[in-house]
Length: 236
Image (cartoon, rainbow, N blue to C red; front, side):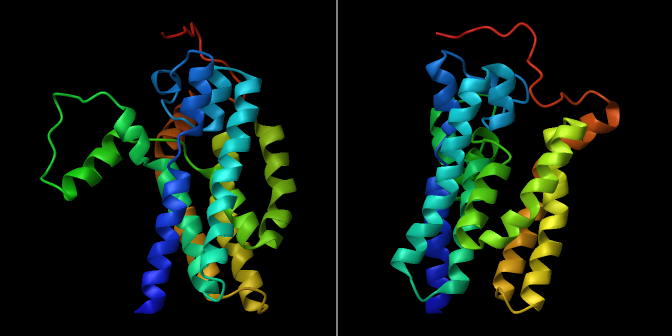
């Protein structure tokens, strides 16, 4: 029971860090609400399309920090709970995708109805708190948790991105390959099974949130990495 509570605490730490809407605030520095353009997400790819390279770089730095810091904090607070630290990674990814802070920033939609709390709060976060896909954040969190898997995957994934120029393809490839690579490390005895389970959960979540991208890839309408959204305009 104690380990379960520690794992939940690590997941909460990860969520609160991951939910910080870096891309939204960076976009506002350029007087642009990135949620109103492109994919409507607050991740680095959409920031690059709607704002530019400078905002993209700042967003990536912020997303990397909010992935790494909760893992370091979880280790500091619970130094002996190695298995539980992995749940900070899942929490950071969930927070980045469905942010309570973005939900609070979103204007209420009078056409939406929700169940009574606490279920209604979850429904609001899912519907109004959509953030980014979380690949950079979860990769940074995994780097803090278990560096070898990121060091193995980073070069092939960057190569795929350069060749195909679809960030969604690179993200989906990471989601599929990462659990396989982690399984290799687990079978070698270099990592606990909890790391593989968490990697599998992360892969499933990333594939799930990329469903619109998969549809656009099939339709041939997916934007390439760095392609700007037409007729971008600034908001007050």
